Image (cartoon, rainbow, N blue to C red; front, top):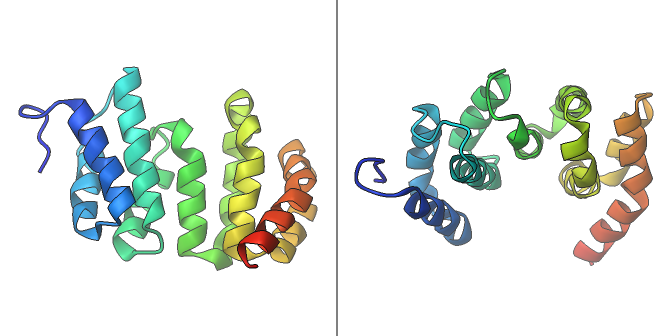
Length: 169
């Protein structure tokens, strides 16, 4: 029940963080509404950080239907904060693993547009997608693309496989 006139941004940030930690799905509609109603729009660093926190928390609830609907809306919005592309991508893959290649194609475009920001995150992204769809399927998809981002993600595949093996024991 966060309202901008009554509560500060730090409170919302903390509530979003607590929602993610406690897996409180009951708070999910309010967080989604906060983003959808553009209650935290703007270029201020604190606004951007809070919006990114909320997107990350919503992504963490994927494949929940509410999360999926929100992630799809935000992904389709060309004006949505581009820095959230990694979390949106991962959430969508979690919701629809069979569509991973389609999401990956768009992710390539977004990374290429903002390569300085995303390039350092590609190892983590590769590992996370490997966890969602498996190492072999991801590697097969990446091999079909001749671009720098796909090659970089392929270079991270040995580490992603190692992490997946450790996680799965």
